[in-house]
Image (cartoon, rainbow, N blue to C red):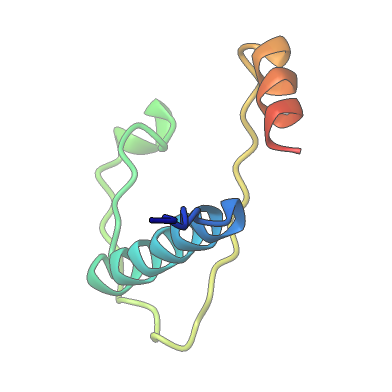
Length: 84
């Protein structure tokens, strides 16, 4: 009897992975409305013990970009080479 092997296309794994990542990011963003970043206030300002006057309206948006230095450029290049 002939058996047909079924293989999953590789793009399906990546689509599933990125879909789950997107869903978890959206859920996380919706549940964590207010985040406090510790250690971000200089000591000179932190010693004043200032309090916020009021919360900003929810219509205000903050766009934040964080740049981090690469620890291992060689491994990143190797990973990208394997992916593409």
